[in-house]
Length: 241
Image (cartoon, rainbow, N blue to C red; front, side, top):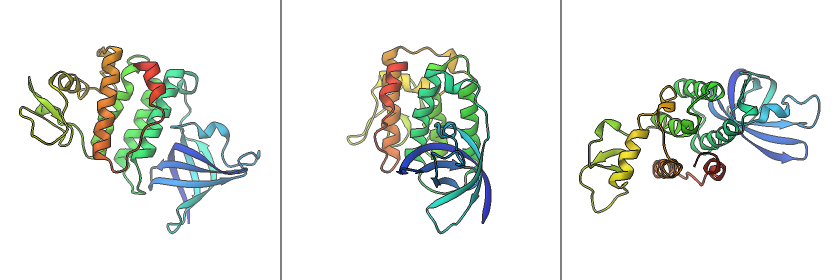
């Protein structure tokens, strides 16, 4: 069956000397993988520039619901980047975000609202001119809402601690559980209010950014099954922490 869809590039893996597997998040079917042959040929359906993490593609595919690997018939750039490929900071953020999506989104389920958020986030990253150092923190907070475990910012009050397991701020810790201390919880509550519109208004020290990113990834690890180590984390720490 022929299918047209918009797709976000997450990751590509070498499959043989002349082919690769492209992992994407699509508008029509969620997480999808494609086998692409003849990648070194001028007639390949994908150019090397199309493999950059978070590239938005318009694809025409031969879709077979009984196969794990689909095939691409035609591909075109769906959104032309203006600054992302040429900005080292934005490029590093794109690699990090794509890896987060690759390790978080496992199932081929359609979610138009999530796809719309991801598309918006990519365009916002490409176009933003201020607050870039807080972009990944804002992204992780907003993405958690679509994953079903958004921190409940409204539960914060002075002297509360953040309960990583239940996603709420509490006054009294239980004997068992994972909690942030009061100082870290107060900082975490600030991050919970970040979005792409206001992120430039917040200033964090390098130590605070590193701490917040560590806590956010721990939060994801608690709530996502088999969520493994993020390899691009070291690059992000060097740039923003």
